[in-house]
Image 1: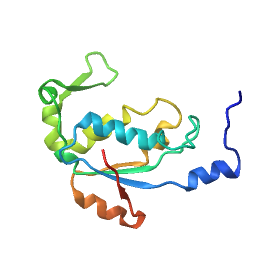
Image 2: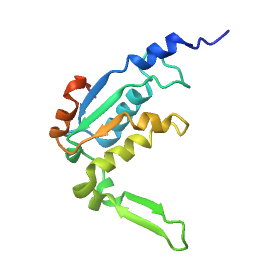
Image 3: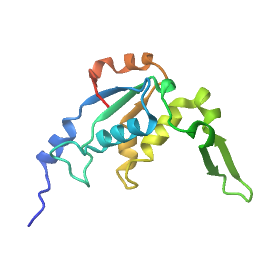
Length: 149
């Protein structure tokens, strides 16, 4: 059995038919929001999904500062990165990040759910995260449709 792969004009048509979706993060659980947004960015819900082509849509997330976390993640979750030098491990708690960089927390949760391949950077460029609803005005020309979680 052969797998069908769109080529030429059909593949270009997939690239042209991108939609814009807006997700309101007010009161939403971070993990559930991130999985839904990642599926839309990848294009998994489309009938013409092809793993090696970027068939996903654009996602705009508003009200990222009002995201909800379950359990005791707000106290226990740590974000770590290393400078590359001995003793260069840096740790920042989620509790200290939420008031300052809530949009970064939401973005990192979504990008962590994307496949680690060559399409990841291209898919990441189609994600926009804003702290409040004022960010939606920037994308009024694209006419984003609300996406239910």
